[in-house]
Amino acid sequence: MPFADDLIGEHAARMLIRAVASAAPGTPLTALRSAAGDLASRSLRERADLLRDAFLADLPGGYAHLARTVRRAGRAGRAGQPPFYGRLIWPVTNAIAAKAVADGGSEAFDDAMALLAELTGRLTSEFALRTLLNHDLDRALAIIHTWTASPAEDVRRLASEGTRPFLPWAKRVPGILSRPRATLPILDALYLDESEYVRRSVANHLNDLSRQQPDIVVETASRWLDVPDENTDRLVRRGLRTLVKAGNRGTLELLGFSAAAPIEVVGPTLSAQRVPLRGTVAFTATITNTGAENVRVAVDYVVLHMKADCRPNGKTFKLTTMTLAPGQQRVISRERSFREITTRRYHPGRTRSNSRSTASARGAAASPCCRPPDRTRAPRRRRGSACLGAVDPGRRGLLRSGKEREGEFGDELSSPNSPFAGVLPCRSCRPVPPI
Image (tube, rainbow, N blue to C red; front, top):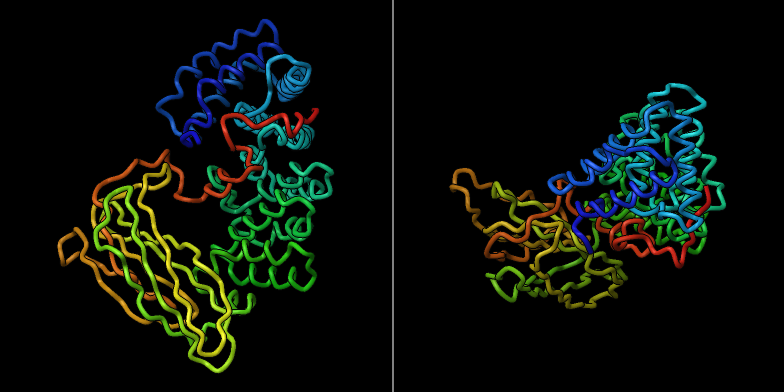
């Protein structure tokens, strides 16, 4: 897996140059050639923006000229000429959106929306779509809603993914954030979609909404569970994952959990108090149903990693979901690795771990921070947590890539259907869509 910033590198820039040169013979492409050698020190979005601006500089003129060139490049790539898919599509779609907005006309806007839909199967148009959403939200949403009936799963996914409130690596759309119900008709049209690729996007969109609008999300999930298919339960659980981790009462009740469950937690116990970088620590805890009825329990654990300023930064991980009979006891064991990964930076100091279930807190342990005592702040305790102790990663780990927020793109990068999987999308399984 490449570093995030390397998803758009010099190779992608050279591919773009070849594709445009084939579609527009005789064009010098001076700006693109210069930009190709100036990517190394930039973050991912900065690389996309640099190539977008170079693409626009090398193809002056109106929107119609740029759109014709892009469509010619797509047809040439399908005929065995320079390829026109993969990472290079990101700056191309950004250029299309920027040129349509600069044009200012409804004809250019509508054609740009259509062209983004045509290109999205070659990588994704989700980032470029944000520019058009910011320019005319209502017009864009009306067009996007028609995409939910497209026969192409990539276009249907674009309808959900491109309108996510907190799409990773993408600019925000203030109109969507201020009107949280604006995208619900799109999600309502797609939550029963036959494609797992589309449904996964719908779940992530719902999860984005939950960050600021938990009541709307619980209401929406409840409606979907009233008219489900065989995939709805899984989709809803994924869409509610942040609210489950936060212990949102309405969410827990919707999923069949009780915040007042008679659960007793003994432990947890750590296998070590100091752990070297790349090492692991094991923990165990015993959970008992002390009531007279069966109890369904969701168990998570929270790792509070030390930040550079010595404040803990919590990250919740799923452990298990189980049903305990009256008096039944379960021992939970898990190992936690401190190996280097590209999306997390480790700092010296104590790293706290808490377990969480539907039960009340059963214990606590405080660990000193590397700051002076008068500035040390203990992490805020949450209902349903039991502290597991503290471990020391030992020293700083691998620097994370770019400026992106931790963890937000992890699911997309690991998905086999992700447009970002590998160095270039596999074209043997999914043919290049025509434009």
